[in-house]
Image 1: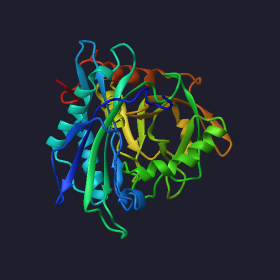
Image 2 (image 1 turned 90 degrees about the vertical axis):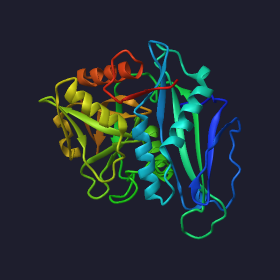
Image 3 (image 1 turned 30 degrees about the horizontal axis):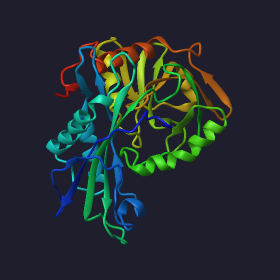
Length: 330
């Protein structure tokens, strides 16, 4: 099977709204949605998704990483597209049911693989006016996955783009499908030019780093401060939030969330991209207007490697997780 997923799984979960409220759903083996051609998701982009993973631990148990934050982000996104929030009980019922139903497809401990879980909500039903849908579908499906960037933990080359991922006061903080559709063309340009992906700059001034493709950016300064960008158009990454905590509380580092000017990117001795899919991807270099900035010696930096190892250790149960970070699926 091509792409990030290693194979399709048998079961997924579906729930629908009735009179504006969510009803309890159920597992199904039907991979296809049969919806009206006038559905909002097609014409007005009323659709968003989440991403989280299930891991088989050293003890043989299965655990999720910070799923409560996925629910918070999902519901904040639903507010933004004027769709009904997903109740906490429904979200966890759906996610855990899908994990348990497809448990034989969760990669074994030691494989460095996981089960990627994709909850999504779409507006459906006949609608040819620009207004919120009257009907919605909540679905969760999953697939076993390997590493997002081929080759595992190795430093990659990125290039800035003149295209914007999202508007300054637009949908950058929301995982709406349209953000990713907008990213396909600049990504392809970067790949065709021999890079692994793009660096998006802030949409207002194009002077500050926003994101790395579909992942968040972070850098480590020469005085050992872990820095992530502060911007109104950045997705609030759960992985970024976690590595900021790990850097401060487990590595004893100072952390900052501030503007990261592209013309001052050489302030970083290490740089990386982080997210649920990418986990942590070291950045070897950033090319901006023909100027190449290489981080360190172009290899995986010490701090990036430590963060990666600690995260994976928590994911797979090798390192005790901070309180509330993991949920065992029983």
